[in-house]
Image (cartoon, rainbow, N blue to C red; front, side, top):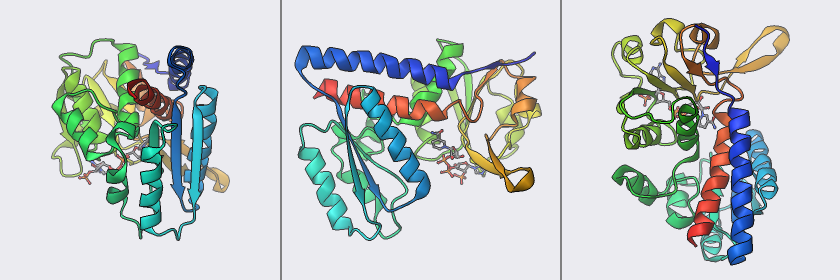
Length: 286
Ligand code: NDP
């Protein structure tokens, strides 16, 4: 068997096109232009690239983009004051604080200061609670992207044995909540899980989010499983160069799985597309 390679780039492009159409409808019907504010504190190079991409894709979708770049030395009180201003600004429907924040700033306090109805990352405790309660909410972007990708292979996931490898608040826990909503039987595995390979082998649907290059071997995968690889790991290759790999040994899994996301080009592109979708959802609800 050779697995289907799930084309996250193309699926994300389709989602962005759909969002852009709905943005036009919202503008025409209610005169509302969805606005996304991104707050970047400090000069982290990777964060600057993410923020630039988010800004470009926001504008491409017909939305307004507001970028706030603050020096790494900005006091926490000033960051909180900016969040307060964005909470009150009617042009801003979504607020995203780019993580990581400098160590001197209490990231949890900053995330809690965001109006939950503008919390397009879905990290505010109110949205975490709504997600756990099965209520409508702004859902975290990468987990939403994972579920959308799995559904391109199998539109109804109900009844599947799903194993989520990783229990972070950003990926593992929320993706497990979303899969419960889809009526999967969900197991969350982590660094203390015993006999990990056998736990993973139960999965009809595997979500790997550990941040360990190619940790999941082909022999761990149930034949015919759907594999969503969230991991982004940079590994050295010859001549001092490097490349990105996922948490799953892709070539090995290809021979066993029914479908698998590549790294790069799988889950990664879905994250911004889902962020735009959340911003639209927040604007529609405003
Ligand atoms: P975290 O480091 O926050 O969490 C990793 C999880 O994996 C933890 O729950 C940890 O267990 C578990 N883990 C670590 N090592 C092992 C092991 N040897 N065996 C079993 N479990 C293990 O990572 P994130 O969730 O933030 O990210 C995971 C990966 O996804 C990273 O590669 C990251 O770059 C990528 N990512 C990609 C995104 C995208 O595509 N847009 C977005 C976000 C993340 P424990 O809790 O016990 O420590």
